[in-house]
Structure formats: structure tokens, C-alpha cells
Image 1 (cartoon, rainbow over the protein chains, first blue to last red):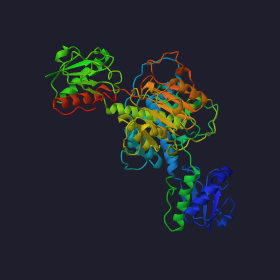
Image 2 (spheres, helix red, strand yellow):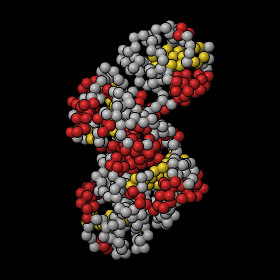
Image 3 (cartoon, one colour):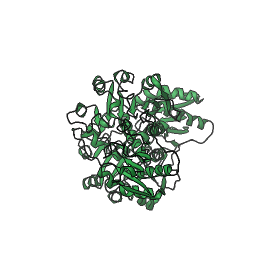
Image 4 (cartoon, chains in turn green, purple):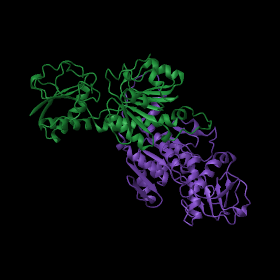
Length: 310
Length: 310
């Protein structure tokens, strides 16, 4: 019998208690799952950064921290964290992200906003968009989420370029890396999708200079992390027409304050951090199976490299 | 040297003269392409229903009529037409249709309209849509266009049912046919996409009784032909909430008159027959290759069955 501490907001406990208990049983893990264990007795922590645990020091026999969140930037720099940390990589999170990214890419590609907002009885001549094959899409960040979005966009005919810090090789995606690769990936791109992790290196990665590399009238879609974009540079590029429209799901401050200029900008769509959500049913299985691996002496999946930050 | 008559609006001639001339040369067809041939000398007619030719009687040696349109309902009943008639089946038309259908399906699935229209500074709690796997889509009409849309929606995780007049077997699509099949295909569907040909049998196929079979709050997307839907029944189903939203690209009268109630209905999006368009570059190759087949004594592709009407 192992002890698993659930450390997240109480609403999460209500959502997770039953599916996580079932998933652990299914994975063959005999566990005492609770929100209240003596730290020295805890084998695993199921963890959200906004839950009660902030100091990992007393968890002396804890074998791993299982994040409920895909992004770990708010915990990775915690100096008290010496235990292995696993990100949440969940197919349903991936599928939801693919739906959101493809939906907004096609929305911009097809000019759907204009049709939704101009229902005024005028049958307008319409300039056909280029076919997808002539609309290059660049994805910054081709981890599990970015790569899945890239495959789906490729299936629809878009030429897809992916950029990452280190070299990758992914079918159907032109993979570039490093500083020169970033310049090449952005040059002439008509749609840019940001799915990088938040690290000191990726902060403001899409700045004024790099936005200028994109095709005139490009679209920016950010379901990744708010700080990846230089906000003031984005507003200037929207005003100049260099960027035709930006759809942002993540922000430096969330909820985005009502007075923030993003809300009022006619070329900017704010969505309230909904691009994809973790579903307790599926996430519970991912976490339970990873704990079962640990108990069987197998290496953990989705282990965070503390040095890289993700 | 064969004589090809180009019979369509003069704007089409401007678009097609050069690509069609090149495509014929590439296909090895020695042709005299003109808008002005003596009818008795014409070997083939490249044809749009709104062009000058309306009486096919004098075209006594014409081997085939090559339609520039995918839909042939306005010519198929022409009593003077005794020559073989070929529809236009063009990959770029298919690709464009897939983009439009997938874009609007995801738009409705994700509730994108609400995000576009409510940029009012309020960070709203959001009820997540079901994942695509729990959002059944039914496509009425699984010819070249419908089947391609079905594959793309399947790739994104939607369960796809296809209905057609006669039995079909298409990978990744649950294929139903006949009257009982239609009832089964519509029962519980959350998204219905209409891509049937317009024939006497398909007129008003989506009527009040059949709309009542759909899941409450279903979405209707019609890029096919206007008369497939009973317009009054649709307005009533939108008002009752049985249908949450309809996006219509085709209408009984086009352009849709400014006074038509579709324009003003808040749950209805009108687009001006743009779901997909024929691109001269690619369509020219399809037509040239079909003429080359005829000249080589091979059977024509995409031959219309006059009895079925498509």
C-alpha cells in the first residue's frame, strides 16, 4: 500500500477523487489516495501549482511529483523540489488542442469572421483564399501538442514548418532548430502557432524583429503561454497591418484585466485559456500508469529535464 | 486537329483561355479552342450552364460536353442534350470544400462565434465542448466531396456517418443508404452536412420531420444545394432551439435577396456560394485529360447518368 497525496484546489479533488481511485485500481496500484498525509509518509504527489504544497522539503521519501498540468514553468524553479517531476501528457489534452488550433487556423485561412459579422443582406464578391497548399504554417514548439497540430494541418494540405530548440525529425513537418532555423521558419510564414514551453529563452521569442519576417498580413495563434509574445510589438504589428489578426488564449496575467488593450483591439481575439483542458477521466489513467511504472522499477514517462525547464 | 467550343461567360474565357490551351497541349491534344465555331464542326464543348449554348441540337458531331461546374442539375434535363455529359471533378474543388466544411464544423463544435462576438473584457467561465469523439457528424451525400470531408473529419476524431441513395463502402465512414438508413443517419446527429446532388428525390430531404430526429441543438451546414433543405422548417427549428445554428452557402435563389429572413436570423450564417470554387489551373487539366481519353477511345471519366441526374 502506497500513499498518494493529492495537492490541488479542492474543486479538482471533487473532479479527480473517483476517476483517479478507479484508474489506480485498474493499473494494479494499491494506494491510499488522500489530501491529508503526513509528508514523511508520501510516496507520490499528484500536484497542481496552485494547490497547498509549495515546499517539497519535508517529502523525504517521495518518489515523484505527478503534475496535473502540461506546463510546469511555475514549479520547475522551486528550489525545494529535488524529487523527479513528470509533466501531464494526455491524449485528450492533445486532441482538444488539435481541434482548437485547426479550428482557428481554418477560421483565419477562410476569413470566417467577416461572414459571421457581416450578415447585412449584401451578397458580396469574394476573393477566394489561397488553397491550403499555398498557405505556409509555422509552429513554434513541436513537442507532443505542436507535432499533433502539425500532422492535422498537414492532412488538410497546409505546408507545415516546425521549430524547436534542438533538432527534431517529424514526418510531414519541415523541422528547423536554432537561431538560424527560427529566422528561416518565420520568413514568409502566413500563420504562426505558438506551442513552446515557457522558459527564460522563449520569453518574447516572437518580438518586433521576428514578426517583421512573416508574410505581410500573417495570422498569429497563441495557445501556448502568454510571455512567448512581446505584447507591445504585437499591438504595433496589428496596427501597421503586418499582422492581420491575432487569436490569443494565454496571457501574462490571467484572467486578462478588463482594461487591457487586447480586449478592445478589433484585430485581436481573446479566448479565456480554453484552447485545451485536461479531462479527469483520461488524465487519471496517465498518472496512474506512470505511478505503476515507478512501482515496477521502470523509468517514469514525461520526466521534466530541470535544466531545460520542461 | 479537333474543335473545342468554349461556352461560358466571357469572364470565364479570360480565366481559362491560357490554362486550358496549355493543359490541352500537355495532354497531347491538338485542338482549336475558340468561343466561336460552326456548331456542326464542334468536337467538344467546354460548358457552363450560364453561357451562350442552350440548344445542343445543331452540335451533331459533338462527342461530349465537359461541364465547368460540379453540379449539373441545370443542364441534365435539357431535352436537346443527347451527347455524353461529364461533370467536373477537380481535386482543388474537393480540397477547398474540405477546408470550408472542416472549418465550419470546428467553428460550431468549439463555439468560436461566441468568442469572436463577445470581446467585452469579461473572462468567462467556459463549458468545454465534448471532444470530437463524442460529437457525431452525419454527411448526406458521400460522393467525391462528401467522402473527402468525411475522411478529414474522421482524422480529427469525429465519428462520421455517411448517407447516400445507394449502398457504399468507404473506410472510416459508417455508410448507410435508403429510407431506413436516412432515419438512422440523422437520429442523434449533432452536425449534419449536406453534399447531395440536387434531384427531384433530394428536394427538401431535410424537412421538419427529419430535423426532429437530430440531437437537440444540432448544427446544419449546407454547402451542397439550396433546395435540399425545407427553408420554413429550418427557420422553425432554429426558433424552437432544435437546431442551434445553420450555416448555409447555397440557396433556392442566388444571390439571396436582401429581404430574405435568412439574412436577419441570429442563428443563421449566410455565405455567398463560396464553399469551394473551381480553379482554372487545375480544372483545365481535368478537362484536357478527359478529352484526351475520348480521342484515345477510352471511356470518359465523370460521365453523368442522365436517369439519376448526376
